[in-house]
Amino acid sequence: MSVTFSVMPTGLTAPITSGAVQVEGVELEIFTPKTTDQNSRAMLELKFDVAEMSIAAYTKALELGLPLKAIPVFTSGRRFVQSGIYLSRASGLSSADELAGRAIGLPQYWISSCVWQRHLLSRMHGVAPSKVQWVTIEAERFDGGLPADVRLRTVPGADLAGLMRDGQIDACMLQGGRPLPAELADLTVPAYPDLVAAERAYYERDGVFPLMHVPVIKQELLERRPEIVAALLQAYAQAKQIAVADPRTEWPVPPLGHTVEQLRALLGDPWPYGLAANRPALESFLTAAADQGLVARRYDVDELFVADLPTEFA
Image 1 (cartoon, rainbow, N blue to C red):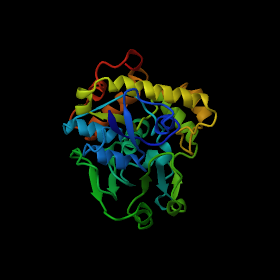
Image 2 (cartoon, helix red, strand yellow):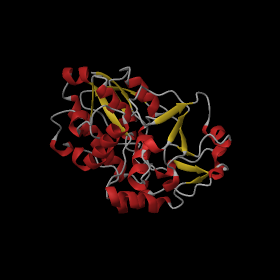
Image 3 (tube, rainbow, N blue to C red):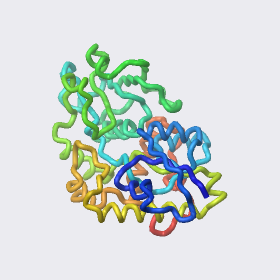
Image 4 (spheres, one colour):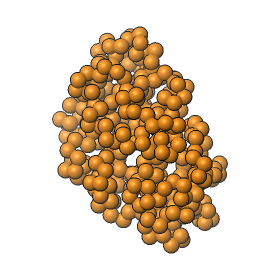
């Protein structure tokens, strides 16, 4: 059986994409996209059999009735999000606590990391999405049902540095953990000067290590070959064992914030598979998604994932 398979390349997926680990009974046609946004847009059009997808896009896809189901492995896009929030030097802001009443720029409103960042601002700083003017610069993957009290405007073709330079935004939210673009460096200060302390404080309060991506499978394939779930999960587990044993593994850790060693000291295994270990993060995301208007109702974790998972992944 030939299956199209598109995942972000990380140390946890490399044994599969390299062919070192096989998926039993399956011949993979492998794709490695440059961004998860690329994959998510493709899966909204059902272009792959199995693909890694933004959890925000996937949750919305469920509401839209797209025939997809997820499996509970999380191989990339797992990170704290504080490192993506920056304050304009010209704004006079010194803390995320002061963002109420201000304008925040971001690429798209419904990027998974931005859902998490709004959740963070609300939980840790008392700044609800309705207390901010949001300014986006890119087309959304889909229409989200914004609550009536949320103010959002889009400036197509703009860039965040230009908006900040012109005084149109007082802060910006980027995908956390990436180096700050050079054009923003002179215009901003980090909202959290001590990232490790801020990330730890959030984890100690909520017990959540945010997740951004999840592999999804087309329902038609699940119905035709239900054994593929166990085969994929076994391959992911075997690939992880190889990654853990190899000192050369490049772990999917952002260059900012906690190091791999610090994450292990705080979390134990930063990349656990299965629903039980990841339920707190999934519950938090689904609550935020409903509260923010991404979806019209609060989904249950089990609605996202394939039924009858093997015991170790349930």
